[in-house]
Length: 166
Image 1 (cartoon, one colour):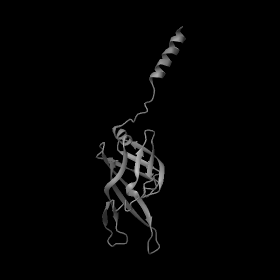
Image 2: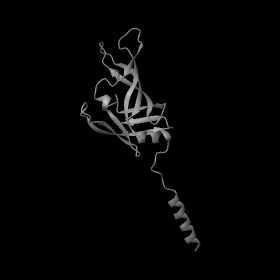
Image 3: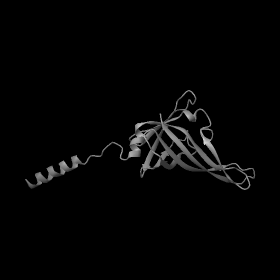
Image 4: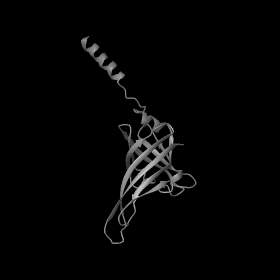
């Protein structure tokens, strides 16, 4: 009898410990409730081959989303940490690209394999000014660029994007 009560207690306890499939943070809930599109921001980079080297800022979409395709791409973040980058608008004809994503501490967003949009296969950055209609996303990329002297040349690009719900 004692083992029967112990077994029933364990079953009741195990049944009450189910994992919720709903997002665990407010930023996560906001991300998964809308589709998102980059509507503005800026990119900061050093002017190549200038002496002395200096930072130059370009506005987005003119700087980053400089073609009509990228300006039409839509990000969808799903509850199961997958997503879709939809580039199937008439301007793009890129189709839908699946990606994965994660969120740390409610503000560090990692987006993996959305290379139709980002300059690298992984973008890890900081979210700020998060609301149900908009958030800012900043990340940094180091790229190897061609150099007239033939030596390796690396430059740092700091992207600051504004995502708006679509």
